[in-house]
Every structure is written in structure tokens, then in C-alpha cells.
Image: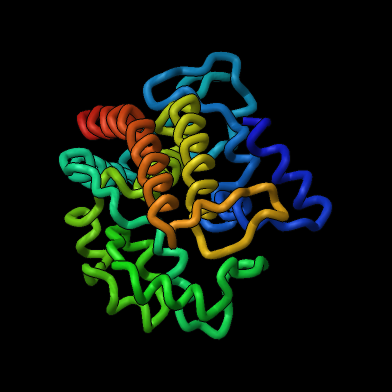
Length: 265
């Protein structure tokens, strides 16, 4: 975890921003200190653990011992149920690998401002042309909701929060990244090794996400995946499929934890 969190903390201390990796902390909102705190998961008793006395979600069943509190699980039960329903529905679908990462392009389509402090590789006109010549096939609401007013009607689906369980699919980069979101939302009910695995996947997905974006990130060491070309789209699909395969066992493991938590009286 230190290898992933440490560089962000050093950049933050120096007042430096990173358009790719900072997103994992600013958008998702799980603080580095929270990531560094190890949790064994629900049902494991920690002996001689006074450092957990003030950690959210824990209680002290006997002096000096701590475990994730059943009362905390009760308060989070609706969230656990939603996550389980979403993961189960997503896992049951075939992956769709035809979006080509165009969501970042749709977020700047005909916009006065851009989202990141980096130049557009193709300029404004070239970026808009890509959106106008390729089909938008986004299935992830939390990407779609940032589409510009001109881009949203171009998507083949009109997505809503209420339809999220019905539209999420396992080929989606953001569905894979969100495994990290769901794991940390359920902390300390799920074990930290699983949280770390989902965070590593989110880091890899974010890198592909931005390499395929309209931004020129060469100053940060990222080579573009030029999805405006047939060869670039083919490269994106291969990388997307690999990330979807990596997400499979993590989605399954997180779903198993959720199902177990829902059986606890």
C-alpha cells in the first residue's frame, strides 16, 4: 500500500498535482491514512489492539480486544445489499468492449473548459470530430453524468442512477475501478488484502483510462492509446479485456464477502 500511496502524499506535500493518479484520492475520497489502516474483516477478533479503540466501525467486546461491530454492519446493511445486487448483476452479463474509452472525450465535447491541466492531443476541433464520428456506448452512469450537454444525447443509452444495476457490465473500465470504491465503502467489514487488490486494479484502469483520453499526458510519462485510429482502438480493446479478466476474481471475492455479511443476524 505504501508503494501506491506514498508518491501521492509526497506530491501533495510539495503542492504538486497529477492529472492521472490524484483522481483515485480526490474523486473516490478514501484518505491515504484510511488506506494504510489494516483491517482483518468482519468476524475476526484482534487481541491486544488498543490502537483500534477509536477506529470507526469497531467495538471492544473484551478489554483490549477489538472487532468490527455488528451494530456497524446493521447500519451498513442496505449498502451491502446494494453492492451485492450490483456485483451479481454485473457478473452475470457478457462484457462489452466497444466503448473505446470515449467517455473522457464526451466530457470535453464542445466545452468551454477542459477537466484537466493538460493540452488536448488533437486540439478542440479534432477532439469534437472524434466524438462526432465514433459511436458513444457508455454503460456507466458515473461517467455518463459528466458528459457535456452536447455529448449526452449521442450516447446509445440514456443512463440514470436508478438503472445502474440494470446497465452495469463487466467490460467497463469504471465498473472495475469501482470495485475499489465498494471495498472501501464497506471498510472495516471487508479485509484489507482485498481492498489493496481492488486499489491496484483501479490504478491500472485509471492509467488506461487517461492514456486513451483526448489529453496529451506525455509530460507525465504516459504514451497515448490513440483511439481515433483503428489500431489504437484495437490496442484499447485488448487492454480493456485484460483489465476485465483481472476484475473477475475480485468481483467474485467481494460478492462472496457481501453475501456472507447479509447472512449475519
